[in-house]
Length: 311
Image 1 (cartoon, rainbow, N blue to C red):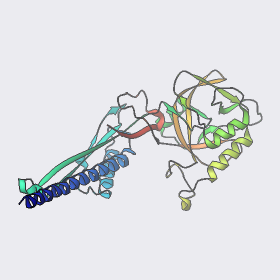
Image 2: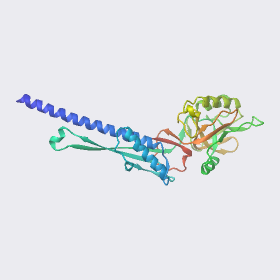
Image 3: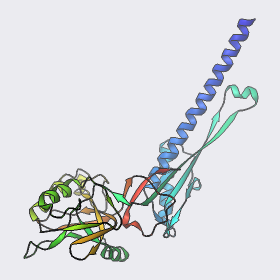
Image 4: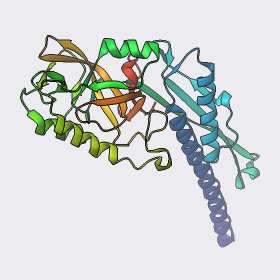
């Protein structure tokens, strides 16, 4: 008798373990679907609060990626836009529900368990960045171009013309004036590995045209693109965010003729290889990083944002 009771209890606990294991698996799948949907839709943040088409596209993207990850019941009503800054939604939440059919639970009158999993993504203005190239675009010029919608074919570095001793747009990233063409070419090719912060600190302007360094660096980056090969590679219309043609630059305020102050960051797709001129088209860029969800924006951020899961 004792053996029979022991076996019965063992079978009961084994059945309960199966139920709990199934419940755990279903909730993990729901969480994965919520994460995937939130990350995919979050790539479209920020969106203007009155841009109904963009909001609809964002929600439909979440539904699509939830379905790809096993949550086919997700609807646009399960996608909620969150924080609003400067007339834009900057966060979203996806809620995925799942029903779990039980086996042994039916003995106790419990046929199903209901579970809900949520994921939230957000963007915030980048206050510091690495990987920048030693170029700056004037903040007033960029704000005017963005307002007018003229964001293609922007000069990021001017040619030398008839001289080579003036300022042609290069910035000394490490703050030590006189790094010369060697530092400029390295930073232009690979990006500066140090951290540049928005704020009051001033960076010196590098003198000289450095045409050879400009051409060599831009040729290396432009030719290294391996995306959209049938369409000539990455452009502002279609680009891979990890493509070498995408460069991150400083948005600057000139202080006299020898220094600049960093006001923000912007991203551009370089459009070709020229002797001593760099021309690019402005694009949005999201970078994995710490998202400051409780901080109000004081500007549109010039299109470069920290992005990730939060909450």
